[in-house]
Length: 231
Length: 393
Image (cartoon, rainbow over all chains, first blue to last red; front, side):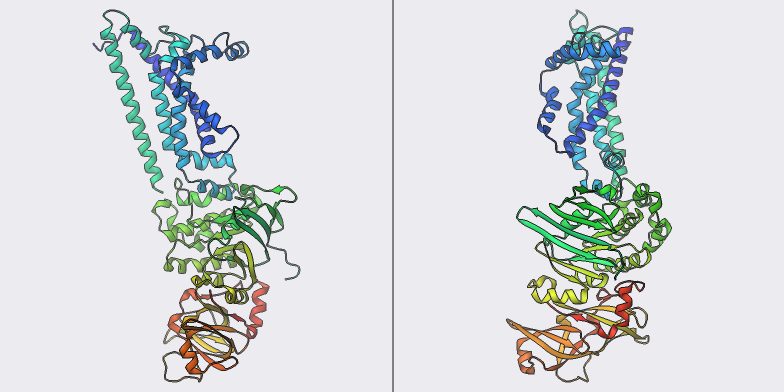
Protein backbone atom coordinates (compact mmCIF):
# COMPACT_ATOMS: atom_id res chain seq x y z
CA UNK A 1 0.00 0.00 0.00
CA UNK A 2 3.02 2.30 0.21
CA UNK A 3 3.38 2.59 -3.50
CA UNK A 4 2.53 6.21 -3.79
CA UNK A 5 1.02 7.37 -7.04
CA UNK A 6 2.48 10.28 -8.96
CA UNK A 7 -0.46 12.43 -7.95
CA UNK A 8 0.16 11.58 -4.31
CA UNK A 9 3.84 12.44 -4.60
CA UNK A 10 2.85 15.74 -6.13
CA UNK A 11 0.54 16.48 -3.23
CA UNK A 12 3.24 15.56 -0.69
CA UNK A 13 5.94 17.67 -2.29
CA UNK A 14 3.53 20.54 -2.76
CA UNK A 15 2.51 20.35 0.89
CA UNK A 16 6.11 20.46 2.01
CA UNK A 17 6.92 23.31 -0.32
CA UNK A 18 3.91 25.32 0.83
CA UNK A 19 4.66 24.70 4.50
CA UNK A 20 8.34 25.59 4.16
CA UNK A 21 7.67 28.74 2.17
CA UNK A 22 4.87 29.80 4.52
CA UNK A 23 7.08 29.30 7.59
CA UNK A 24 10.03 31.04 5.99
CA UNK A 25 8.01 34.13 5.06
CA UNK A 26 6.08 34.28 8.30
CA UNK A 27 9.22 33.96 10.43
CA UNK A 28 10.62 37.52 10.25
CA UNK A 29 7.17 39.06 10.68
CA UNK A 30 6.44 36.68 13.52
CA UNK A 31 9.70 37.52 15.30
CA UNK A 32 9.06 41.22 14.91
CA UNK A 33 5.46 40.96 16.14
CA UNK A 34 6.52 38.78 19.08
CA UNK A 35 9.29 41.16 20.07
CA UNK A 36 7.00 44.17 19.75
CA UNK A 37 4.37 42.53 21.93
CA UNK A 38 6.94 41.39 24.50
CA UNK A 39 8.99 44.56 24.75
CA UNK A 40 7.28 47.64 23.44
CA UNK A 41 4.48 49.73 24.81
CA UNK A 42 2.60 51.41 22.00
CA UNK A 43 -0.92 52.69 21.44
CA UNK A 44 -3.17 50.02 19.99
CA UNK A 45 -1.06 47.21 21.43
CA UNK A 46 -4.16 45.31 22.60
CA UNK A 47 -5.79 45.67 19.22
CA UNK A 48 -2.62 44.52 17.47
CA UNK A 49 -2.46 41.51 19.77
CA UNK A 50 -6.07 40.74 18.96
CA UNK A 51 -5.54 40.93 15.21
CA UNK A 52 -2.49 38.69 15.42
CA UNK A 53 -4.55 36.08 17.24
CA UNK A 54 -7.68 36.34 15.08
CA UNK A 55 -6.80 33.43 12.75
CA UNK A 56 -6.50 31.22 15.81
CA UNK A 57 -10.01 31.89 17.04
CA UNK A 58 -11.94 32.52 13.84
CA UNK A 59 -13.28 29.58 11.83
CA UNK A 60 -10.63 28.82 9.17
CA UNK A 61 -13.25 29.20 6.50
CA UNK A 62 -13.77 32.81 7.57
CA UNK A 63 -10.03 33.49 7.34
CA UNK A 64 -9.95 31.87 3.91
CA UNK A 65 -12.94 33.92 2.78
CA UNK A 66 -11.36 37.15 4.04
CA UNK A 67 -8.17 36.24 2.17
CA UNK A 68 -10.23 35.62 -0.94
CA UNK A 69 -11.89 39.01 -0.57
CA UNK A 70 -8.64 40.89 -0.05
CA UNK A 71 -6.02 38.89 -1.95
CA UNK A 72 -8.30 37.46 -4.65
CA UNK A 73 -8.07 38.68 -8.22
CA UNK A 74 -10.54 41.43 -7.55
CA UNK A 75 -9.58 41.96 -3.94
CA UNK A 76 -8.08 45.38 -3.14
CA UNK A 77 -4.66 43.98 -2.22
CA UNK A 78 -4.70 41.17 -4.78
CA UNK A 79 -5.50 43.43 -7.72
CA UNK A 80 -2.85 45.92 -6.62
CA UNK A 81 -0.16 43.23 -6.32
CA UNK A 82 -1.14 41.63 -9.63
CA UNK A 83 -1.12 44.94 -11.45
CA UNK A 84 2.11 46.38 -10.08
CA UNK A 85 4.25 43.37 -9.18
CA UNK A 86 2.71 40.54 -11.16
CA UNK A 87 2.18 38.60 -7.92
CA UNK A 88 -0.96 36.51 -8.01
CA UNK A 89 -2.23 34.53 -5.04
CA UNK A 90 -5.66 33.40 -6.15
CA UNK A 91 -5.80 29.70 -7.05
CA UNK A 92 -2.03 29.38 -7.00
CA UNK A 93 0.22 27.48 -4.64
CA UNK A 94 1.52 30.87 -3.43
CA UNK A 95 -1.99 31.59 -2.21
CA UNK A 96 -1.97 28.33 -0.29
CA UNK A 97 1.33 29.39 1.28
CA UNK A 98 -0.16 32.74 2.22
CA UNK A 99 -3.16 31.05 3.83
CA UNK A 100 -0.88 28.68 5.74
CA UNK A 101 1.35 31.53 6.90
CA UNK A 102 -1.62 33.50 8.18
CA UNK A 103 -3.07 30.49 9.96
CA UNK A 104 0.23 29.55 11.57
CA UNK A 105 1.12 33.11 12.53
CA UNK A 106 -0.61 33.32 15.93
CA UNK A 107 0.93 30.06 17.14
CA UNK A 108 4.33 31.20 15.99
CA UNK A 109 4.04 34.59 17.68
CA UNK A 110 2.79 33.09 20.93
CA UNK A 111 5.78 30.81 21.38
CA UNK A 112 8.29 33.47 20.40
CA UNK A 113 6.72 36.12 22.56
CA UNK A 114 6.97 33.89 25.63
CA UNK A 115 10.61 33.34 24.85
CA UNK A 116 11.35 37.04 24.49
CA UNK A 117 9.49 37.75 27.71
CA UNK A 118 11.51 35.11 29.52
CA UNK A 119 14.87 36.61 28.58
CA UNK A 120 16.33 39.01 31.11
CA UNK A 121 15.66 42.54 30.03
CA UNK A 122 18.65 43.73 31.99
CA UNK A 123 20.94 41.88 29.60
CA UNK A 124 19.58 44.14 26.88
CA UNK A 125 20.19 47.14 29.12
CA UNK A 126 23.72 45.93 29.74
CA UNK A 127 24.30 45.73 25.99
CA UNK A 128 22.97 49.28 25.72
CA UNK A 129 25.37 50.65 28.32
CA UNK A 130 28.19 48.90 26.45
CA UNK A 131 27.33 50.94 23.37
CA UNK A 132 25.13 48.58 21.37
CA UNK A 133 22.22 50.34 19.67
CA UNK A 134 18.76 48.82 20.11
CA UNK A 135 18.92 47.15 16.68
CA UNK A 136 22.35 45.66 17.33
CA UNK A 137 21.23 44.59 20.80
CA UNK A 138 18.29 42.81 19.22
CA UNK A 139 20.49 40.78 16.91
CA UNK A 140 23.35 40.12 19.34
CA UNK A 141 21.44 39.58 22.57
CA UNK A 142 17.65 39.31 22.36
CA UNK A 143 17.48 37.07 19.30
CA UNK A 144 20.14 34.51 20.32
CA UNK A 145 18.72 34.27 23.83
CA UNK A 146 15.22 33.68 22.49
CA UNK A 147 16.46 31.16 19.92
CA UNK A 148 14.92 28.03 21.49
CA UNK A 149 11.53 29.74 21.56
CA UNK A 150 11.94 30.87 17.98
CA UNK A 151 12.58 27.29 16.90
CA UNK A 152 9.48 26.16 18.74
CA UNK A 153 7.48 28.93 17.08
CA UNK A 154 8.77 28.01 13.65
CA UNK A 155 7.91 24.35 14.15
CA UNK A 156 4.43 25.17 15.39
CA UNK A 157 3.93 27.37 12.35
CA UNK A 158 5.24 24.63 10.07
CA UNK A 159 2.99 22.02 11.65
CA UNK A 160 -0.01 24.28 11.35
CA UNK A 161 0.86 24.90 7.70
CA UNK A 162 1.03 21.16 6.98
CA UNK A 163 -2.31 20.60 8.60
CA UNK A 164 -4.03 23.64 7.22
CA UNK A 165 -7.17 22.81 5.27
CA UNK A 166 -10.15 25.10 5.76
CA UNK A 167 -8.63 28.47 4.90
CA UNK A 168 -6.61 27.03 2.03
CA UNK A 169 -9.47 25.26 0.32
CA UNK A 170 -11.68 28.33 0.70
CA UNK A 171 -9.06 30.71 -0.64
CA UNK A 172 -7.35 28.75 -3.40
CA UNK A 173 -9.62 25.71 -3.86
CA UNK A 174 -8.40 22.15 -4.40
CA UNK A 175 -6.53 22.04 -7.69
CA UNK A 176 -4.32 18.96 -8.16
CA UNK A 177 -0.73 19.96 -8.84
CA UNK A 178 -1.31 23.58 -7.86
CA UNK A 179 -3.12 23.87 -4.55
CA UNK A 180 -3.93 20.29 -3.59
CA UNK A 181 -2.01 19.64 -0.39
CA UNK A 182 -1.94 16.34 1.52
CA UNK A 183 -4.94 17.39 3.57
CA UNK A 184 -6.90 18.36 0.49
CA UNK A 185 -5.89 15.14 -1.27
CA UNK A 186 -7.04 13.04 1.70
CA UNK A 187 -10.30 14.95 1.70
CA UNK A 188 -10.71 14.22 -2.00
CA UNK A 189 -10.04 10.52 -1.43
CA UNK A 190 -12.72 10.37 1.24
CA UNK A 191 -15.22 11.80 -1.19
CA UNK A 192 -14.81 8.97 -3.73
CA UNK A 193 -15.65 5.27 -3.36
CA UNK A 194 -12.62 3.02 -2.71
CA UNK A 195 -10.50 6.02 -1.78
CA UNK A 196 -9.64 4.53 1.61
CA UNK A 197 -6.29 3.06 0.60
CA UNK A 198 -5.09 6.36 -0.81
CA UNK A 199 -6.34 8.27 2.21
CA UNK A 200 -4.52 5.87 4.53
CA UNK A 201 -1.27 6.13 2.55
CA UNK A 202 -1.32 9.90 2.78
CA UNK A 203 -2.28 9.75 6.42
CA UNK A 204 0.78 7.60 7.12
CA UNK A 205 2.94 10.05 5.20
CA UNK A 206 1.64 13.03 7.12
CA UNK A 207 2.28 11.23 10.41
CA UNK A 208 5.87 10.57 9.33
CA UNK A 209 6.39 14.19 8.31
CA UNK A 210 4.89 15.52 11.52
CA UNK A 211 6.96 13.21 13.72
CA UNK A 212 10.15 14.01 11.83
CA UNK A 213 9.54 17.74 12.23
CA UNK A 214 8.77 17.41 15.94
CA UNK A 215 11.81 15.25 16.69
CA UNK A 216 14.04 17.51 14.61
CA UNK A 217 12.76 20.54 16.46
CA UNK A 218 13.28 18.84 19.80
CA UNK A 219 16.89 18.09 18.88
CA UNK A 220 17.60 21.62 17.70
CA UNK A 221 15.94 23.07 20.76
CA UNK A 222 17.89 20.84 23.11
CA UNK A 223 21.11 21.84 21.43
CA UNK A 224 20.23 25.49 21.70
CA UNK A 225 19.28 25.14 25.33
CA UNK A 226 22.47 23.31 26.15
CA UNK A 227 24.36 26.12 24.47
CA UNK A 228 22.50 28.70 26.54
CA UNK A 229 22.75 26.62 29.68
CA UNK A 230 26.48 27.15 29.70
CA UNK A 231 25.40 30.39 31.27
CA UNK B 1 41.50 71.79 42.24
CA UNK B 2 41.16 75.05 40.40
CA UNK B 3 41.48 74.64 36.65
CA UNK B 4 40.64 70.96 36.68
CA UNK B 5 37.66 69.94 34.69
CA UNK B 6 34.62 68.60 36.36
CA UNK B 7 34.42 64.86 36.10
CA UNK B 8 30.81 64.54 37.06
CA UNK B 9 28.05 67.03 37.67
CA UNK B 10 24.62 65.70 38.49
CA UNK B 11 21.50 67.57 39.53
CA UNK B 12 18.18 65.87 39.21
CA UNK B 13 14.66 65.55 40.38
CA UNK B 14 12.36 62.63 39.88
CA UNK B 15 9.03 61.71 41.35
CA UNK B 16 8.42 57.97 41.69
CA UNK B 17 5.06 57.44 43.28
CA UNK B 18 5.36 58.90 46.73
CA UNK B 19 9.16 58.80 46.62
CA UNK B 20 10.85 61.98 45.59
CA UNK B 21 14.43 62.05 44.42
CA UNK B 22 16.00 65.47 44.53
CA UNK B 23 19.78 65.47 44.55
CA UNK B 24 22.77 67.35 43.25
CA UNK B 25 26.48 66.66 43.48
CA UNK B 26 29.74 67.34 41.69
CA UNK B 27 33.17 65.84 41.91
CA UNK B 28 36.32 66.25 39.92
CA UNK B 29 38.58 63.37 40.82
CA UNK B 30 38.95 59.90 42.16
CA UNK B 31 36.03 57.77 43.16
CA UNK B 32 32.70 59.33 43.98
CA UNK B 33 30.68 57.13 46.30
CA UNK B 34 26.93 57.24 46.61
CA UNK B 35 26.28 55.99 50.08
CA UNK B 36 22.99 55.24 51.75
CA UNK B 37 20.69 52.44 52.65
CA UNK B 38 18.33 50.76 50.22
CA UNK B 39 15.50 53.03 49.23
CA UNK B 40 17.62 56.16 49.56
CA UNK B 41 17.64 56.73 45.79
CA UNK B 42 21.02 55.27 44.84
CA UNK B 43 19.79 52.94 42.14
CA UNK B 44 17.53 55.52 40.55
CA UNK B 45 20.46 57.91 40.44
CA UNK B 46 22.60 55.28 38.74
CA UNK B 47 19.77 54.61 36.27
CA UNK B 48 19.54 58.29 35.42
CA UNK B 49 23.30 58.75 35.02
CA UNK B 50 23.49 55.74 32.72
CA UNK B 51 20.47 56.88 30.74
CA UNK B 52 18.32 53.86 31.53
CA UNK B 53 15.93 56.25 33.25
CA UNK B 54 14.99 59.85 32.64
CA UNK B 55 14.73 62.52 35.33
CA UNK B 56 11.78 64.90 35.51
CA UNK B 57 14.16 67.81 35.81
CA UNK B 58 17.88 68.42 35.95
CA UNK B 59 21.05 67.48 34.16
CA UNK B 60 23.84 64.92 34.00
CA UNK B 61 27.24 66.09 32.83
CA UNK B 62 30.16 63.69 32.66
CA UNK B 63 33.62 64.73 31.61
CA UNK B 64 32.36 68.01 30.15
CA UNK B 65 29.84 66.15 28.04
CA UNK B 66 26.17 66.92 28.62
CA UNK B 67 24.30 63.61 28.66
CA UNK B 68 20.96 64.75 30.00
CA UNK B 69 19.57 68.23 30.22
CA UNK B 70 15.85 68.31 30.68
CA UNK B 71 15.53 72.08 30.36
CA UNK B 72 17.30 71.99 26.99
CA UNK B 73 15.36 68.89 25.90
CA UNK B 74 18.60 66.94 25.61
CA UNK B 75 18.76 63.24 26.26
CA UNK B 76 21.51 61.00 24.95
CA UNK B 77 20.37 57.36 24.81
CA UNK B 78 22.36 54.88 26.92
CA UNK B 79 24.21 53.32 24.00
CA UNK B 80 25.71 56.64 23.00
CA UNK B 81 26.71 57.76 26.49
CA UNK B 82 29.77 55.60 26.90
CA UNK B 83 29.12 54.95 30.56
CA UNK B 84 30.27 51.57 31.74
CA UNK B 85 27.84 50.12 34.23
CA UNK B 86 28.78 47.22 36.48
CA UNK B 87 25.56 45.70 37.73
CA UNK B 88 24.89 44.12 41.07
CA UNK B 89 24.82 40.63 39.59
CA UNK B 90 27.19 40.95 36.64
CA UNK B 91 24.66 40.42 33.80
CA UNK B 92 27.19 38.69 31.61
CA UNK B 93 25.79 37.48 28.29
CA UNK B 94 25.12 33.79 28.87
CA UNK B 95 25.36 32.91 25.19
CA UNK B 96 28.85 34.33 24.74
CA UNK B 97 32.12 33.10 26.22
CA UNK B 98 34.18 35.26 28.53
CA UNK B 99 36.44 36.51 25.77
CA UNK B 100 33.49 37.66 23.63
CA UNK B 101 31.77 39.15 26.66
CA UNK B 102 34.87 41.19 27.37
CA UNK B 103 35.15 42.43 23.80
CA UNK B 104 31.46 43.18 23.41
CA UNK B 105 31.62 46.84 24.36
CA UNK B 106 34.84 47.32 22.46
CA UNK B 107 33.13 46.74 19.12
CA UNK B 108 31.08 49.86 19.66
CA UNK B 109 33.67 52.16 21.21
CA UNK B 110 34.80 54.86 18.78
CA UNK B 111 38.25 54.07 17.42
CA UNK B 112 39.88 57.17 18.89
CA UNK B 113 38.56 56.30 22.34
CA UNK B 114 39.95 52.77 22.50
CA UNK B 115 42.68 53.80 24.85
CA UNK B 116 42.39 50.85 27.22
CA UNK B 117 44.29 47.77 26.19
CA UNK B 118 42.66 44.37 26.35
CA UNK B 119 45.75 42.69 27.73
CA UNK B 120 46.24 45.26 30.47
CA UNK B 121 42.67 44.83 31.69
CA UNK B 122 42.86 41.05 31.58
CA UNK B 123 46.08 41.14 33.52
CA UNK B 124 44.95 43.68 36.12
CA UNK B 125 41.78 41.75 36.80
CA UNK B 126 43.55 38.40 36.70
CA UNK B 127 41.06 36.80 34.32
CA UNK B 128 43.41 35.49 31.65
CA UNK B 129 42.67 31.87 32.52
CA UNK B 130 38.93 32.44 32.17
CA UNK B 131 38.86 33.70 28.58
CA UNK B 132 37.59 30.51 26.98
CA UNK B 133 35.12 29.73 29.75
CA UNK B 134 31.39 30.40 29.77
CA UNK B 135 29.76 32.77 32.24
CA UNK B 136 27.64 30.02 33.78
CA UNK B 137 30.75 28.14 34.83
CA UNK B 138 32.28 31.04 36.75
CA UNK B 139 32.14 31.70 40.46
CA UNK B 140 30.48 34.87 41.71
CA UNK B 141 33.78 36.65 42.17
CA UNK B 142 35.08 35.64 38.75
CA UNK B 143 31.87 36.73 37.11
CA UNK B 144 32.06 40.12 38.74
CA UNK B 145 35.67 40.58 37.65
CA UNK B 146 34.70 39.76 34.07
CA UNK B 147 31.80 42.21 34.32
CA UNK B 148 34.19 44.91 35.48
CA UNK B 149 36.52 44.09 32.59
CA UNK B 150 33.68 44.18 30.10
CA UNK B 151 32.58 47.62 31.28
CA UNK B 152 36.16 48.89 31.35
CA UNK B 153 36.96 47.63 27.85
CA UNK B 154 34.10 49.61 26.36
CA UNK B 155 36.45 52.53 27.12
CA UNK B 156 33.80 54.50 28.97
CA UNK B 157 33.88 58.11 30.07
CA UNK B 158 32.83 56.94 33.49
CA UNK B 159 32.55 53.64 35.28
CA UNK B 160 29.45 53.15 37.38
CA UNK B 161 29.42 50.46 40.03
CA UNK B 162 25.99 49.58 41.34
CA UNK B 163 26.70 47.71 44.58
CA UNK B 164 28.94 45.38 42.62
CA UNK B 165 29.74 43.15 45.57
CA UNK B 166 26.40 42.90 47.26
CA UNK B 167 26.14 39.29 46.15
CA UNK B 168 29.69 38.31 47.12
CA UNK B 169 31.01 36.95 50.36
CA UNK B 170 33.64 38.72 52.41
CA UNK B 171 36.59 36.81 51.00
CA UNK B 172 35.63 37.61 47.38
CA UNK B 173 35.13 41.22 48.33
CA UNK B 174 38.59 41.42 49.82
CA UNK B 175 39.96 40.12 46.54
CA UNK B 176 38.14 42.64 44.39
CA UNK B 177 38.32 45.86 46.39
CA UNK B 178 42.04 46.35 45.68
CA UNK B 179 41.28 45.81 41.99
CA UNK B 180 38.99 48.79 41.99
CA UNK B 181 41.73 50.83 43.60
CA UNK B 182 44.09 49.80 40.85
CA UNK B 183 41.54 50.65 38.15
CA UNK B 184 41.33 54.10 39.61
CA UNK B 185 45.10 54.49 39.62
CA UNK B 186 46.08 52.61 36.45
CA UNK B 187 43.40 53.42 33.95
CA UNK B 188 42.54 56.90 35.24
CA UNK B 189 38.86 56.32 34.77
CA UNK B 190 36.44 58.36 36.80
CA UNK B 191 34.36 56.07 38.94
CA UNK B 192 31.01 56.43 40.64
CA UNK B 193 30.54 53.74 43.23
CA UNK B 194 27.24 52.92 44.87
CA UNK B 195 27.23 51.09 48.16
CA UNK B 196 25.64 50.78 51.53
CA UNK B 197 28.81 49.30 53.06
CA UNK B 198 30.68 51.90 55.02
CA UNK B 199 33.90 49.89 54.76
CA UNK B 200 33.83 49.92 50.97
CA UNK B 201 32.97 53.59 50.79
CA UNK B 202 35.54 54.71 53.33
CA UNK B 203 38.16 52.64 51.64
CA UNK B 204 37.62 53.63 48.03
CA UNK B 205 36.05 57.03 47.80
CA UNK B 206 37.63 60.44 47.65
CA UNK B 207 34.20 62.01 47.70
CA UNK B 208 31.17 60.58 49.46
CA UNK B 209 27.63 61.64 48.66
CA UNK B 210 25.40 60.48 51.49
CA UNK B 211 21.84 59.92 50.32
CA UNK B 212 18.85 59.67 52.57
CA UNK B 213 15.22 59.47 51.47
CA UNK B 214 16.05 60.78 48.03
CA UNK B 215 18.08 63.74 49.23
CA UNK B 216 21.75 64.51 49.61
CA UNK B 217 22.41 64.55 53.30
CA UNK B 218 26.09 65.31 53.19
CA UNK B 219 28.88 65.49 50.67
CA UNK B 220 32.65 65.56 51.12
CA UNK B 221 35.68 63.45 52.01
CA UNK B 222 34.74 60.22 53.81
CA UNK B 223 36.53 61.12 57.04
CA UNK B 224 34.51 64.35 57.24
CA UNK B 225 31.19 63.25 55.86
CA UNK B 226 30.71 59.82 57.32
CA UNK B 227 31.02 61.25 60.82
CA UNK B 228 28.70 64.15 60.19
CA UNK B 229 25.98 61.91 58.87
CA UNK B 230 26.58 59.51 61.64
CA UNK B 231 25.67 61.85 64.42
CA UNK B 232 22.31 62.43 62.80
CA UNK B 233 21.57 58.94 61.58
CA UNK B 234 19.49 56.88 63.88
CA UNK B 235 19.65 53.74 61.85
CA UNK B 236 21.42 51.03 63.86
CA UNK B 237 21.74 48.97 60.67
CA UNK B 238 25.03 50.59 59.78
CA UNK B 239 26.57 50.03 63.16
CA UNK B 240 28.68 52.65 64.84
CA UNK B 241 32.05 53.30 63.29
CA UNK B 242 34.71 55.96 63.02
CA UNK B 243 36.88 56.72 60.04
CA UNK B 244 40.46 57.77 60.84
CA UNK B 245 43.22 58.86 58.53
CA UNK B 246 46.53 57.45 59.73
CA UNK B 247 50.02 57.13 58.40
CA UNK B 248 51.66 53.78 57.84
CA UNK B 249 54.66 53.35 60.08
CA UNK B 250 57.25 50.63 60.32
CA UNK B 251 56.33 46.99 60.02
CA UNK B 252 57.10 44.47 62.73
CA UNK B 253 57.90 41.59 60.46
CA UNK B 254 58.71 39.21 63.30
CA UNK B 255 55.11 39.41 64.52
CA UNK B 256 53.49 40.27 61.20
CA UNK B 257 52.19 43.61 62.39
CA UNK B 258 52.21 47.09 60.95
CA UNK B 259 52.27 50.31 62.90
CA UNK B 260 49.67 52.96 62.09
CA UNK B 261 50.50 56.43 63.30
CA UNK B 262 48.25 59.22 64.41
CA UNK B 263 49.14 62.37 66.36
CA UNK B 264 47.07 60.89 69.20
CA UNK B 265 49.07 57.69 69.34
CA UNK B 266 49.42 54.53 67.36
CA UNK B 267 47.61 51.31 66.72
CA UNK B 268 48.74 48.05 65.19
CA UNK B 269 47.32 46.29 62.19
CA UNK B 270 47.76 42.62 61.42
CA UNK B 271 49.49 42.14 58.10
CA UNK B 272 50.90 44.70 55.69
CA UNK B 273 49.16 48.03 55.16
CA UNK B 274 51.13 49.55 52.31
CA UNK B 275 54.53 51.16 52.30
CA UNK B 276 55.84 53.35 55.05
CA UNK B 277 54.61 56.94 54.95
CA UNK B 278 51.46 56.06 53.00
CA UNK B 279 48.19 57.44 54.11
CA UNK B 280 45.68 54.84 55.23
CA UNK B 281 42.03 55.16 56.08
CA UNK B 282 40.99 53.03 59.02
CA UNK B 283 37.52 52.14 60.10
CA UNK B 284 37.11 51.41 63.77
CA UNK B 285 33.86 50.08 65.15
CA UNK B 286 32.65 51.82 68.29
CA UNK B 287 32.18 48.44 69.96
CA UNK B 288 35.86 47.64 69.40
CA UNK B 289 37.05 50.68 71.40
CA UNK B 290 37.77 50.37 75.12
CA UNK B 291 38.07 53.49 77.26
CA UNK B 292 40.53 54.09 80.09
CA UNK B 293 41.31 57.08 82.28
CA UNK B 294 44.97 56.15 82.62
CA UNK B 295 47.44 54.84 80.09
CA UNK B 296 47.03 51.17 80.87
CA UNK B 297 49.78 48.62 81.21
CA UNK B 298 49.48 44.88 81.62
CA UNK B 299 46.61 44.58 79.13
CA UNK B 300 46.63 42.73 75.87
CA UNK B 301 45.46 45.70 73.89
CA UNK B 302 48.44 47.62 72.52
CA UNK B 303 46.84 50.22 70.35
CA UNK B 304 46.22 53.43 72.25
CA UNK B 305 44.92 56.80 71.12
CA UNK B 306 44.75 59.80 73.44
CA UNK B 307 41.98 62.40 73.40
CA UNK B 308 39.30 64.28 75.24
CA UNK B 309 35.66 63.37 75.74
CA UNK B 310 33.66 65.64 73.51
CA UNK B 311 30.17 64.33 74.11
CA UNK B 312 28.37 61.51 75.86
CA UNK B 313 25.06 60.34 74.59
CA UNK B 314 23.11 57.85 76.69
CA UNK B 315 20.68 55.38 75.27
CA UNK B 316 19.17 52.70 77.51
CA UNK B 317 21.96 50.68 79.08
CA UNK B 318 24.46 52.04 76.57
CA UNK B 319 26.57 55.15 76.36
CA UNK B 320 28.02 56.53 73.14
CA UNK B 321 31.14 58.58 73.65
CA UNK B 322 32.54 61.04 71.11
CA UNK B 323 36.26 61.50 71.61
CA UNK B 324 38.21 64.38 70.11
CA UNK B 325 41.61 62.81 69.49
CA UNK B 326 44.76 64.82 69.98
CA UNK B 327 45.56 66.27 66.58
CA UNK B 328 42.06 66.86 65.27
CA UNK B 329 40.67 63.33 64.78
CA UNK B 330 37.38 62.03 66.11
CA UNK B 331 36.77 58.58 67.50
CA UNK B 332 33.54 57.01 68.54
CA UNK B 333 33.33 54.57 71.43
CA UNK B 334 30.55 52.55 72.94
CA UNK B 335 30.33 51.28 76.51
CA UNK B 336 27.71 50.54 79.11
CA UNK B 337 26.22 53.46 80.97
CA UNK B 338 27.37 51.95 84.27
CA UNK B 339 31.01 51.74 83.11
CA UNK B 340 30.96 55.39 82.13
CA UNK B 341 29.40 56.36 85.47
CA UNK B 342 31.91 54.31 87.44
CA UNK B 343 34.78 55.88 85.51
CA UNK B 344 33.16 59.22 86.23
CA UNK B 345 33.71 60.28 82.63
CA UNK B 346 32.25 63.62 81.65
CA UNK B 347 32.70 66.14 78.92
CA UNK B 348 36.27 67.50 78.40
CA UNK B 349 37.87 64.73 80.47
CA UNK B 350 41.11 63.33 79.04
CA UNK B 351 40.73 59.71 78.05
CA UNK B 352 42.64 56.90 76.39
CA UNK B 353 40.99 54.83 73.70
CA UNK B 354 42.23 51.26 73.33
CA UNK B 355 41.81 49.61 69.95
CA UNK B 356 42.22 45.86 69.53
CA UNK B 357 44.38 44.89 66.60
CA UNK B 358 42.39 41.74 65.99
CA UNK B 359 39.23 43.80 65.56
CA UNK B 360 40.65 45.46 62.46
CA UNK B 361 40.48 43.39 59.31
CA UNK B 362 41.79 44.11 55.85
CA UNK B 363 38.48 45.48 54.83
CA UNK B 364 38.90 48.34 57.20
CA UNK B 365 42.06 49.66 55.62
CA UNK B 366 41.96 51.71 52.46
CA UNK B 367 44.45 53.75 50.53
CA UNK B 368 42.39 56.68 49.52
CA UNK B 369 42.92 58.50 46.24
CA UNK B 370 45.72 58.03 43.82
CA UNK B 371 49.14 59.28 44.82
CA UNK B 372 49.20 61.17 41.54
CA UNK B 373 46.24 63.34 42.27
CA UNK B 374 46.56 66.69 43.91
CA UNK B 375 44.14 65.68 46.62
CA UNK B 376 46.41 62.90 47.76
CA UNK B 377 49.39 65.20 47.76
CA UNK B 378 47.51 67.72 49.84
CA UNK B 379 46.42 65.14 52.30
CA UNK B 380 49.78 63.56 52.58
CA UNK B 381 51.65 66.77 53.21
CA UNK B 382 48.98 67.71 55.68
CA UNK B 383 48.97 64.37 57.37
CA UNK B 384 49.28 65.97 60.79
CA UNK B 385 45.97 67.61 60.10
CA UNK B 386 44.40 64.26 59.44
CA UNK B 387 40.84 64.36 60.44
CA UNK B 388 38.62 61.64 61.61
CA UNK B 389 34.99 61.11 61.99
CA UNK B 390 32.95 59.22 64.41
CA UNK B 391 29.41 58.25 64.63
CA UNK B 392 26.55 55.91 64.53
CA UNK B 393 26.04 54.15 61.28
